Image 1 (tube, helix red, strand yellow):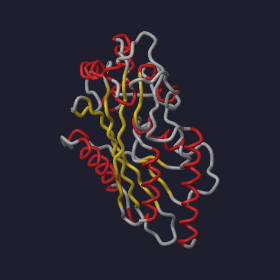
Image 2: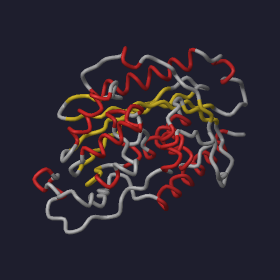
Image 3: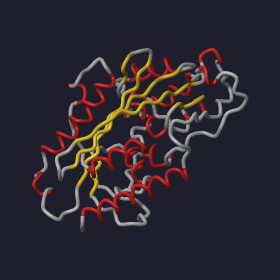
Length: 287
């Protein structure tokens, strides 16, 4: 395939995926408030300035299948519906996250899964932006160290991309990763009650064929109504909070009704911004 035809095919694929995203999701960087919890009263003084005075809430951000997320079932690692054009590259997701798999599936990509299996707590930085980028790069390096890279650099083969990412929650200026105990999870969730948190996500896409590596950040904010103690204890008993940064599982049916608003994209909060992933994949193919 000539380079011109390859780039044209790639662009068509990405545009097709983008149209799919736009038809089923609200655009990124829109305010997506969620219906309040029945027993929770809004705390207007804690809302961001652009939320003050709003008379009604809009529809909630679209979420992934609750059955898949809560049961721990792993979805197929390929898109359930074929794209209009054959995917002109191979894609590897460097993560076992169910949410990230679902996000790539929703984007229409075919991909395989590899895990980094690194000790994330051995990499420490006080700056959340620096931390998530270092972790995303470390995951890519760990996966690549187990590969025979020359297998991906054969003449005439399709390019292969590796996408890795990491996310942390920042609350009151403190980085929060996956809670390590019930006490820590309880402290995290109680702190979110009637308050807000920020999420910082780092995404790295490596073109294994050319060796080029591109990365960038995506941020969002989540505003909560009061979170009842009963809900907190139920989440801890289920154990789902121990598998996500900050114990924050936005799409959980017990959590979603308590979300007052999401500023940014809900998929970014869940671990992988679709817009950023699409942008980096496109740029990595041209690199």
